[in-house]
Length: 129
Image (cartoon, rainbow, N blue to C red):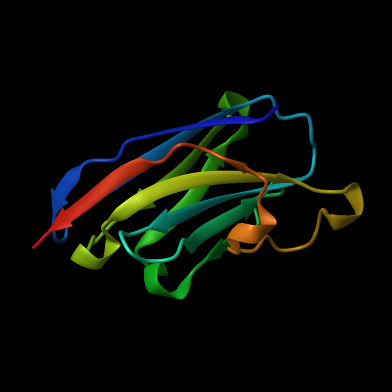
């Protein structure tokens, strides 16, 4: 069973930076996607960024150039570096995991929440103006 635990959320001011971490365990797939998503109160869950087991990366347009997804496979940790934070980035941030077939290893990972089966509990990011 895949388990995901996020950390690193905090309250910061506009223009500040944060790095979120997601420790994952129980992964038996050699080909997979991992992603970061966020959900603000009263809004739907929104895709932020995704990375494949081969390190192909996708970033959603609202965060492109400000956020960077990465992973440390040796230490089973997913990261989201967030720079130039804005009040509209305020949300609960979740990491997610989806295993894939071997023949999907070159396919780009998406930031569509419905494509992910495993989720963490979330970490809160609040950006004040």
